[in-house]
Image 1 (tube, rainbow, N blue to C red):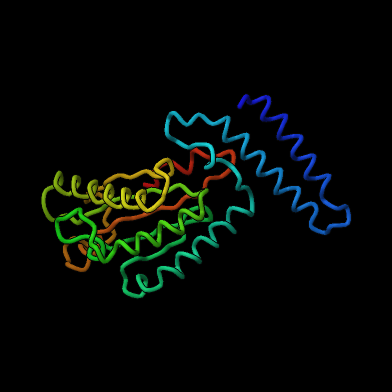
Image 2: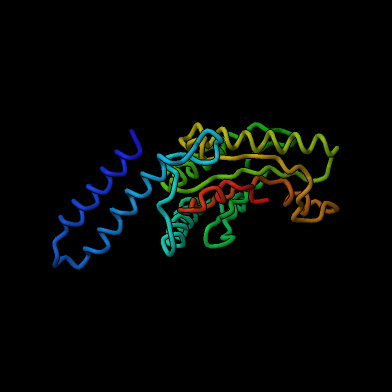
Length: 228
């Protein structure tokens, strides 16, 4: 659709919606604001150049101000509720990094066999649950980062971390998450969170992190910037 025609149609649509809201409706301003936000998001989507893979149409710009925090609050609450069993079993930890970012830490013992990048069958249901929720909150960019301990060579650990991040990303994609929303990478042994000199520390370091970053209007590309 031609952008000028889209813009003109959008203005007409907003005017129609605002006029259609009863003047004595206490929610008139809220309804009108929501309508304008939806139309602006539509226009932004058509203006976006998705050829570089950063973001595309439906993913762009409906969240601003207080809406961002509320959006992430609801997404976090739903993830915590639906993944309650995994959290109790220390298979998944959910951390709020900031107003716009959530991190899901997936322990490798729960998701992969030793030295393997093949997802364990008993963890696939958990990934489907994640995908269902992330799919519902479709203004979220998804980053998957693989990590290992320092056992083995650095090159082997780097490759294994990349393969595990790829496995998780592909399964999320097959479970319904749009590939345009996702980025994935391996960090090898370079970002430990525990001591590699102890078995408990090495266990902590073997993990996959899933970062969920809100796509904020006017700053869309920031959501697709690597978290680390």
